[in-house]
Length: 183
Image (cartoon, rainbow, N blue to C red; front, side):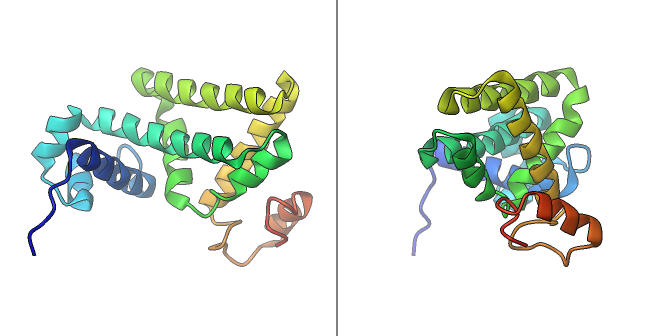
């Protein structure tokens, strides 16, 4: 059976998804364009030809992760913070998205990366305000809680793949029973 050729857009998306997976596992410094190419099933020169540099692939992966949150929020139809929280809860089992975000935040000391990551975070903050009408403090508290859950999900404290809870985990889970899935 002949192989179907992917369009340039499909191939780019395939590489970005592979980048999310590899960067979320090993971080910016620990991932090479060769690692990404192997994960995507393409050559390393092809990755460079499409993106120009590892940094640009990383930025595309950060944008993809932030886009997943934006899509979850928009498609939820939620008009309040609880509804957006429910939409975000659906992402907590997607370790790669959470890990990509965390690696993006961690790499923000690089000015080019930091500018993009801050822009992504700012767009999400403004989207929360737009969709819910939340005041500044309410939206900031929502984002802060979301950051806590991003970290907890990445550590596998919450979500379908959560490890058996330690006492400190149980305390946090009890404080947020709805978002922690009742664990």
